[in-house]
Image 1 (cartoon, one colour):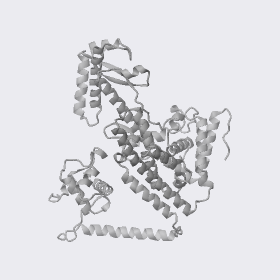
Image 2: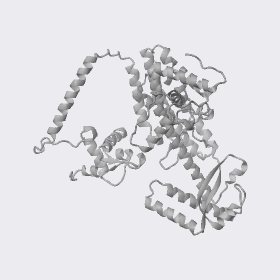
Image 3: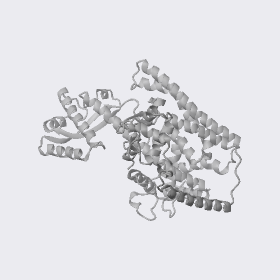
Length: 548
């Protein structure tokens, strides 16, 4: 392929990269498919970034609350010229107090009594805002809070005020890496797999700019407004053009939106990644099997070493070392060193993930990438309470990854074993047509049997209760319903159901609950950590309950 010109015309250089990407996608279907798959992976990266950013914001406000509760507006630790965080709190403040606080600039020393009064008012405003922003707050209570707020201002006893709280930044503070950023400092923090996703997303947007038949088509609606809006925004704003040109049929490329230097590095990386796919001979089945088994072994070793690090963590805490100190962070880095080494080698060693990924089906590839993200020690894990912490602080049991790991490792070994199987010969198209016709005939007969099952013959042909998709309600499903029926109004997690019922395997319990949820017999309205509860339809399925 022609190389990119190195002249001063930045737009010409960007157009040259665009041409190269389009040629590569046109000649190689696998490259176009990689771009399409990267778009979905990029959506997952964006969702992860929002979750980590929300967790960081929650932690920031938690630190501010602790400082305010201690009667301070300014963290005394900030006097040592250490890095600080600025948290703004907006709310109502008594008029007289606001006048006194306005006389002091941010960070100025103020009388202790005044600082305590200001901290108390800021704490009240912070707590009120937390209640007001709670999604579970009823509209009636939210409206009442709004009326109360406006009444206090109208009475001129309070005014709107903004407190600027200075907090010493914790030693382990680190903002999440932004996948939407093109700054080198952000991009170099991503794993190899995530960086590849970002590169292909950007190159896909460049290739699709002004294209009548884009590689990545416009996302279709899923019924989830939040996800649909995120997908549409990611699809629309991936084009490297000026904002004013987004509604034009043939928008012009913008070297400011995507610097040609960055685009040239991205296409060079993409060509390097996929050069083996184009030119290298397929790996011998025996070598491929060894590679799959090696990857499975590395994932298993990561789990073992993580659990071993958990034992070291207990000894560190037992020694009296506080979990928020820099000394604790240094000791935990040593405790997780083996995990970090294996995690990095798994992605960088050409005989491991780079070797097997081209031979993975989409489902297995997604499982691998998910496990890589979930074992990234620098990423954060939400705790369900609006906060999160780095994964290196988490124990293996707290992350609850055994089920996914126990599923991934056998899949990798099975993929390696499948590499040794002889390839099946191609099927004659005429045979395929005949099979499809037979399948259609069988489905018609099945529909007739379903209509016969509905007849009233004294119960001799009564149908079993059915789940979504025509799957019968088995004794295992009945067992799960019975466990939930003991306390119909209380929500139970998968772990709760597995502990209280006759079926102990958590993965099996999770599958049964998902099937019952699809059938409308149980629900979990408040998310994974809040658990499942019976619906009205589910309560009617309980022994002794009326089905009418």
